[in-house]
Length: 604
Image 1 (tube, rainbow, N blue to C red):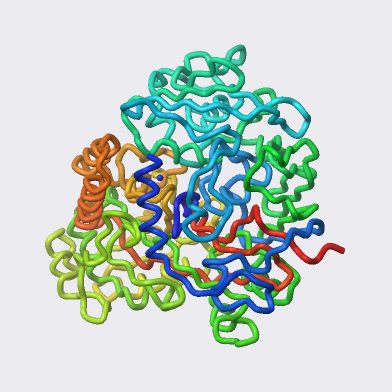
Image 2: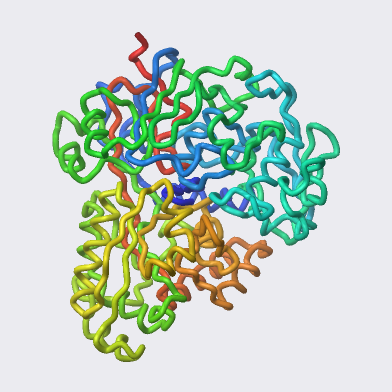
């Protein structure tokens, strides 16, 4: 999940990713237990905010309250990749979209390990799989309705999956797990190819009645239930769909609906959806009367307004910026309002594998050796910003090997002699030039690019930093192979969180050659390694958890040998919660606060 997207985690994000966020039920439960055990975290029990401790929100609910009313105020320095739940991969979008878009399954509303457990949302129960995990069946709850009072049906969910995954006009953002997994769908051209019957030929999902969905897979996939948490499973009525323009006025299935149209770069306002039935919804408290989001606000302004009590939540969920971070961490009057959770988000740089001279692995390895990891960590805020990463998978995931370090150097400053040897090996003894892509509105991204630029210059690898807006970065710039090639973006700053807590949930979309897309591409290094691809194909049908973990270790090591990714840090975020915010806790599934639980004491 793009962090997005991101999780001490499961999707988003999810990615992004979180959530992107970030899973068969038994195997994933084991993975999640390991994941949360590794996350640690301080804090006492949930109590009033006056008793709150530094980092309490990582493991407990801070300032619990059932008080309803008021306006919950969000702001973000960029914009949504899209508020359309079928067209998003940022972890914060996965988290926020739950206000108006219910999914088949969801995470439990709770801090710690319990919050990572799957539970039904639109579904009556968790899906039932057949003996070889190639068919999964679930039923929808009775009485589910859209904001206009019309019934939500199984076909609406089938349609939502079709529009976001299939055909030349499929929505570009978001993962494409359904394309990879659903059987008998290779010839389906998507819902926009046939106005009379948009689902004709889409046989991978069967809807025998209005409340039943049967997913037919083309291979065993024991972790499939965790795909059903994605926003792409939020229902969409076909007659309301307008493709990418649907984002202007998404039809709500949740406790809130759009108040007016979404204004890109400006605002999104939500008001209560009177057709929402709380008795069918296990995780949405719906405490505020209204939710307002300001878009495109400078990060320093957001941070200051949070501390002043003029805002409630930084929507991006990645924490305060560098200017505010040191202040709130060290100020005794502010520390009790701060959480510094350890996440499973990897901050890293993609190294393009198809662009000359980086198509030579030795040139890529020169970058790995020349990188100054100490400076890169400092770009992310030092110890409070994250822990230096030497492998791709977060250490909390089964199969991760934190001792893996293929490019060691003294004091993590880089091995310039080895870098020079690699440059000579790839025929570039005098160095070469390329560009580094970064998100302009994310200061840590830019600082990371600058730190790498300085490190590479020591071996005559000259770089130009090119900056782009976050809301288009994954789809239009870094996530577009043609744009990458045209703009010489040999290196791109990025972040990733597990879509769910396994090696597959974390690595498949950024390392599997089959995941490369023309737009919305997450395998930005464009790695297409036969051995890695074969391991990904093999691991999905492996029942034994330990055996799967062993394969994930091999994938990680092989990708590091291929120097497709330069890991920077496993992130720690510095999150600020104003005193008026209620029911605040860090949700491991979204790698940020759980937005569905939040309320405010400002109810005037």
